[in-house]
Image 1 (cartoon, helix red, strand yellow):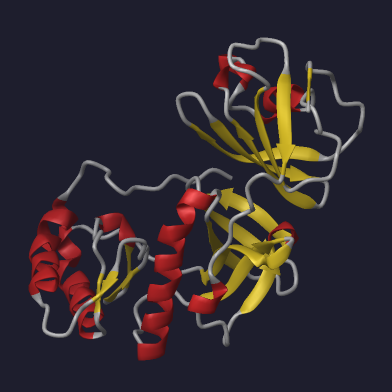
Image 2: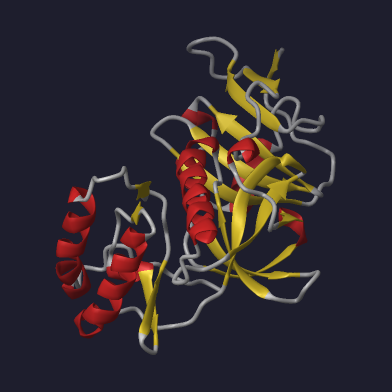
Length: 280
């Protein structure tokens, strides 16, 4: 079905939570009343350049789309025919919402939380936030996959945390819960305990070496040991961010040796690679 743009007349509580902009197609993740929905724009010129990044102007254009007032979880929007300038086609639920493959995870020790039940305190990066859990009042660190293409890295990371928890590795944050949108089949993130410490410099080389050596002894090569993936508290360095980590194959020590050899240079690095920001 196709029709010209027309303004929605239905009042909803809507907010753009996340966006991913490519050259000519855009993804938006939107809070819509008590649900999280997704919009894929396949013809970039449907939204003017100065209206693509801020919630209010984005929504002012999206609300004119066909089917906007209907119930859907994902909406795919394109021109009804090539070269058309005034006729828009919207398809409800053309693509499924994303989620972790729960069958691949150890779920026994953790709790599931609805994303909308979390109180946001501050953004650490595009995908990481400090949040408060209403049920416990505790502050946690939330990491999510905002869109489907971010799921593989998140899946890898939670799998590594499961491996480390099972082996008793003591120097990474504990995963304390998984976060879903709507239903558990749409699990898009996890909660970690909040840890304290300072970002290490070269003066913390011994502490970081001990941690990396222990990590390797537990069978994991981190793969991205920039200095911002450690926090040092007293005489211990804790490590996190396992998106590219791998479980070592038996007898394969080359990657672990290379990682350890590179650690000193990583701690001396002052370029800011890996540095996160905080907005709250």
